[in-house]
Amino acid sequence: AQEAGWWGSECDLQLTKDGEVLVVHGPNHSDGKKKLNVNKSTKAQVQAIPLSSGEVVPTLDEYLEQTCKNKNTKLIIEIKNQLTPALETEIVEKTIKAVAKYGLEKDVEYIAFRPFVCWELARLAPEGTKIAYLNGDYTPAYCKAMGCTGIDYKYGVLKAKKHWIKQAHKLGLTVNVWTVNKEEDIR
Image (cartoon, rainbow, N blue to C red):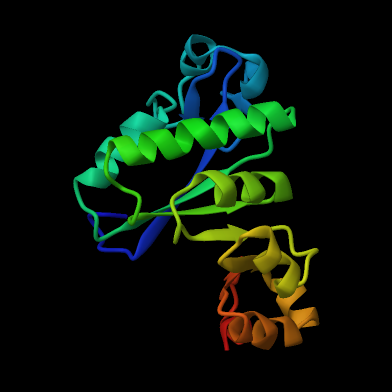
């Protein structure tokens, strides 16, 4: 993404049972032969299964080190659902701390499907941090009250509830949509 000059790149974070933050979609990681639940496995166990490229599942720190090399490409971090609210608080705290360690607070945006993760981000991240809710089941007003700065909903949700786009903009929220693969949908 950085080499291509793209505006941004998104990654997903999972917490291992030994408290490491890994960049993996999860909750399962597999090579087609062996399958592990990331949240119930150690970092070493997850990294022992190579990606299809032959590379190792990266840590959040490795991703942030790469982000520092070209801040023109914004990093969008999706904090995935964890097994408990306590683990969601833990991954949020560790992520915010790591982002601060690399001085990337203004270069990172957050997205999450879980309302609790959004609330924790709003509570713990520096003021002005961009946080968007993904699930598509809450009104823009509710998302704003949750501490979000935007909504990031599946195409079908916003197509069915077009009025939410105007509502979000009136509230000062950003609006993003995923996944749009057809030209007619883009229009």
